[in-house]
Length: 95
Figure 1: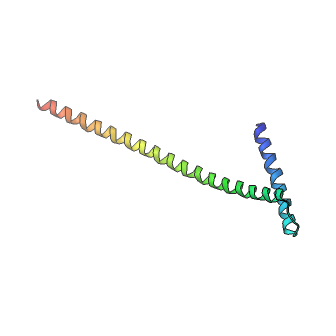
Figure 2 (figure 1 turned 45 degrees about the vertical axis):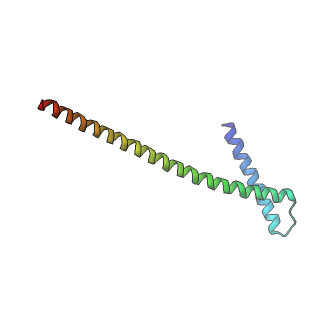
Figure 3 (figure 1 turned 135 degrees about the vertical axis):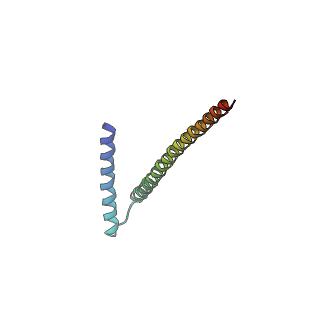
C-alpha cells in the first residue's frame, strides 16, 4: 500500500518536473545536462512502458493459446481412450 502511494507520488513529481523542463525548452531557454538527461530518461520510461504493455498482451494471448491446446489434447486423449476401450470390448465379445 505504502509502495503504491510512494510510486504514484514519484510519478506525479517526475511528470511535473518534465513538464517544467519542456516549458523551459519551449521558451527557448538553455537546458542543463541534468535536464536533458531527465527528458531522455522520461522518453525511455515511456517507451519501455509501451513495450512492456505490448509484451504483457502477447504473453496473455500465448497463455490463452496454451490453455486451448491443453484442453484440445485432453479431449483427444479421452477420445483415443474411448475408441481403444470400445475396440477392446468388441474384440473380447467376439472371442
